[in-house]
Length: 195
Length: 351
Image (tube, rainbow over the protein chains, first blue to last red):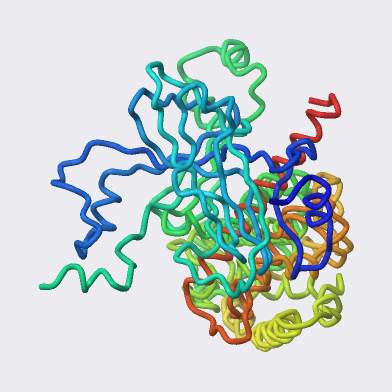
C-alpha cells in the first residue's frame, strides 16, 4: 500500500510512466495517510422496474435488457439524490483516474458513509494502466433513505505496486461516467451456454 | 438560460423574453410589461440538434449563435440613410435588371423598391452570418473553423442566398472569412510549430494538411462567380468586406475578456494534446494549472482530425469509437475545468 508521502510524490511527478493521475483533485487534503478520497460524480444509472423476466448475461440481447431497466441521469451541483432502503444504483467518482503500468488500486467505502448503511463498491479492483472514472455500485442497506450529493467525498482509493503490468485491455476504455456491466463480453460464455 | 435539444439540425440561441414581450404587447400596457420583465434583460434558450447532442466538439457552433446578438447590435449602428442612398446609387437606372427599361414609370418604381428591399435584406442576412462567424472565431478560435467546415459538408458550398435558405451566404464565402483569420492571426504558424513525439508530430502534419486542403477550397472563387452573375446578389455583397472590417472593433470591444486569443492557444495546445494521447481529459497543463476550456476543445478537434488512436498506441489503428472517446474526454475536461474554477473561487471566499 502506498502511504501519503509516496502518493504525493507520484501525483506530482511529470514522468507519465510513473505518474498517478487524479483529475480534478479539488483539494490536496483528499490525499490521506494511505488513500485518496474520491468524490461522488454527477451522473448516475438508476435502476427501474421493467417488464423483463431476468437479466441473463448469457442472452445475446442482454445489454438491451440491462438498458431497459436503467436510466441515466445527470444532476447539477446542489441537486440531491435520495437512495431508499434496498435501492441499488450506479454512480461514479468525480475524479478521472490514471494508473501507471506498475500500479494497481482498490476502492473502498469511507467508514463514515458505511455507518449510515451505504455500501459503496462491491467490485473494487482497478488494474494497472486503467484510465477513467471509477464506477461505484451504491446500495442502501440501512433502514432510512439516504441523501446523496454530487461532489461529496464518498469513497477512497488505495494504491499498491503491481509487478508485470502491461497495456490495459479491459472492457471499459476511458469511461467518463458510470458504465453498465458487460458480462456478455466474457469470451468463454459460449462454452457455458451450449446451444 | 435554458438548454434544449431540438429535432431540426441547427444550433440556435433564442431570447424568449423578446417573444413574450411581443405576445403581451397587445394585451398589457408597456409599463406593466416593463414591470413584469424588470430584472430579466434576456432569457435565452440554447438549442442543440438532437443528433449532435453528444458531439461536444461541434458545440463550438454556439459561439456563432451567440454572435447573432452582437451582429444585430452592430447592424443597428449602421447609418441606414447612407446605406439606402449608396444602394440606390449602385442600382442606378436598373439597366442591369431584365426588362426594367420597358416598364412604365410606376411599375418601374415598384420593381425598384422591391429590388432595393431584396438587396438590403440579402446584405443584412449575409452580414448577420459573417459577423456571427467572426464572433465564433474570436470566442472559440480554430474550433469554430473546424465546426463550420463540418457543418458545411452536408450542404452545397456555392449555394446562392435564396428565400428558401433564409438568404444564407454561400458556405465557401463563410469558410474563406475564417481561413483569413487563421492566416492573419498566424494560428497557422502555431500549428506548424507543434513539436513533440508521436502522436504530436502526426497531429501537426494532419492539421497542416487539413488547412492546406481547406485553403484549396477557399482559393476557388466559384461562389463569387455565382454571386456576381446575379444583379441583386452582386450589389448586396459589394461592400461586405468593408462592413466586416468595420464590425471587428465593435465586436472585440463587446467581447472583451471572453476573446480566445492566439497566445492562450499557442501556450496550451501541445500540453493538452499530450494529455489526450495518454488517455486523460485535456484539463491540466504541464505546470499543473488549468487551461482555458476552449483549448481543450481545440485539442479535441486537432486530435480527432488526425485520426490516431486514443489512448495513443503505435500498434493501434484509428477506429470510429475513438471519436466518441475524444468527445467524452473533452466533455469531462470542460466539466473539470469549470468545476475547479468555481471551487477555487468558493475557497478563496469570492463566491
